[in-house]
Length: 281
Image 1: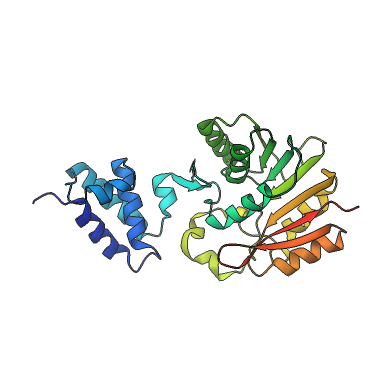
Image 2: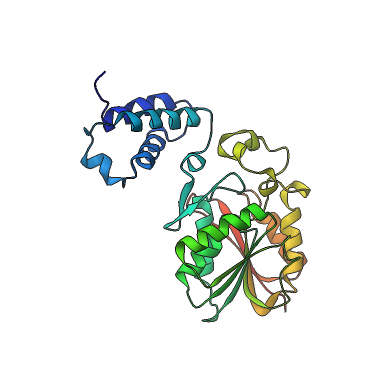
């Protein structure tokens, strides 16, 4: 049998995935490039280049995993976030573009030059490392309840040599030393435990503990908002990611606790995505 070309491999895989993915061609390209260890431009420059038998077999194995629903990021072991390639695995959430809304908002705040920032439930470290890479003068603390997530975030920190980040295990604030932060950020669990989306797509392969919260998805947000008042500086900010239908509910939580300058920010799709508030007077 004659060797298969890059273009033929992509066409075959796209057809295989068309009923199993919202982005079948992109999935196929990402998986092939991972095997070839090539940049995206390679597929445009060398569409007729032949795959070796080894690469062809590996590609078919990757496509078979994707057909079973396994996320592309888990197959490749990597996902890019805020232009940082990050290691990922099934111990925590896969970083999503929606969360870049939180990073963008945080970078737009008026904070001290040497701001102290706390990222609660850091997972891969995506938020903390993005902020640290953009603002080398900031000191960023990142914590997670899961030791596996802490190990993963530490790998990502070392990968990008971001020495202004401290990563530790903590159940929210339980292991955070008493101090005042200029900014507290979090992408906590906020999905209801009976949400139909938990049985669909990539979330089937992600830990429920990082997705689901009691009180209709508000329990962890409420806990963070309550405890944060002991850790924020007098003009400090808190910034929480939440579901697209939870903006009003999160604003109410902040208002009940006397936070000020409460504002919900929309993501690129125009959906409520993060809510900002400032330390009560």
